[in-house]
Amino acid sequence: MLPRLSPTRIGILIALAFIAYLPALHIPFIVDDYGQIPLARQFAAQGWTPLYANHELRARATYMFMSAALDRAFGFSPFIFHLAGIALHALCVLLVYATALWIEIGEPSAFFAAAFFAIQEGHQEAVIWPAAAADLLVFLFGMAAWLCWLQWLRSKSWKWYAAAIASCLLAIASKESGWIFAILMLLPVAFDRTHRRARIFAGLAPFFAISGAYLYWTWTSRITAPGYHDTRFALSAPWLLILLNSWWRLLFIWGLIAIALLLWLRKRGDWRLLAISSIWIVAALFPYCFLTYQLQVPSRLTYIASLGLAWIVGAAAVRLRESRRQTLFAAACIAALALNLEILWVKKMSQFRERAIPSELMKDAGLHSDGAVRISCYPLPDFIAVDVLKSVSVKAIFEPGAREDESCFTVDYRTPAGQLVHESRRITPAKHGTFF
Image 1 (cartoon, rainbow, N blue to C red):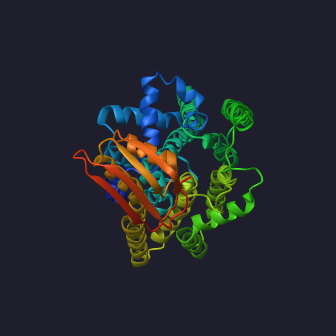
Image 2 (image 1 turned 135 degrees about the horizontal axis):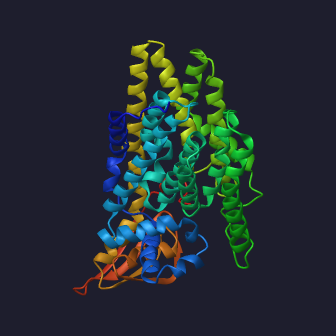
Image 3 (image 1 turned 180 degrees about the horizontal axis):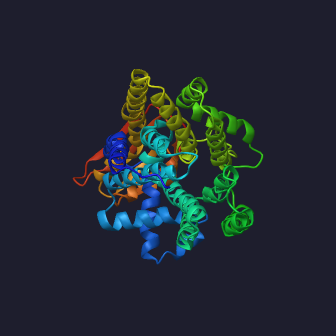
């Protein structure tokens, strides 16, 4: 018998997802937002043909489609794009709750897992940064495919199978890592031996064929194509060190506390959930472990892996509740909510406002100019300065010897009234890691 998903709990989860990220609605656009959203608008106006020629953005087609639709309907508005990101996050939270359909998870654990996933600060960049919405979309469609696959295993209904194939294709069109969901579909098969293996592997074949074809196409048309040069990733990267660092950072500190609780309140079968969650985390992190610019996976790229963490935390919450230690259970829930919200509302929102300072300064100069801003020093790459000024219909002119310096902002412009303005200030570099 399938577990019943509580409408009340669904409402609670949606509320948690929105409450956790409401302050993000007032954060301006930052860096890549100024380039990618106008590009989506341009691609849409040209019938989307140029998107195929863009090796990086064509891998995130659903994000580009969404950006173009939002821009056309509501304009170039940070509020709307942030609201869309939070809404996508809420849908992803509900999919985490839907993993209750798998007997290895169950409804109580799935609910607490989804509640933790809604407020967990570790993957916040995927929700707060509009340019990272592809991470939300690949999770949304990939998990939809995974859950439809699970339902097909249960019901043998080909409607669920068709829905799984369609969702898998959308996941592949959302981000380069969409192929990992084909591998993750092996988990229900490996941990439930009641299914007929021949039928199951025949059912898996199209998903692996889609993923394999996508990887081959990406390799031959992008990575090994003449002129392709991307130093952010390399097969020679210290992938094992990056994987271990990322695994540790993901588990610290809530995962470690949850594992300790599961070991303390031992229940037969918990090892299976720990094994499932660990495999999920490693598989979800692995595609991103070939970075060259840092030794851990950026927060936005942990969004899929965070589900494995959430399952561990959800199971620990259920065990604590079942142990009738109500005071400790309540204290743990309050601490998890308060600490994650404090980090999100205070630390992370402050970091994103710091990220927005250079582009906001440049945009403000453009708004007060007569149509051109001369740039001598700017803390971000040239193309970002150009994109920011384009957003307010102003031309960027780089002075001879203009330089990129993360601690300075120096521009000159003439106001519509004819007044010459020289603006020069020092900027404290934000200490929050890379934008890539």
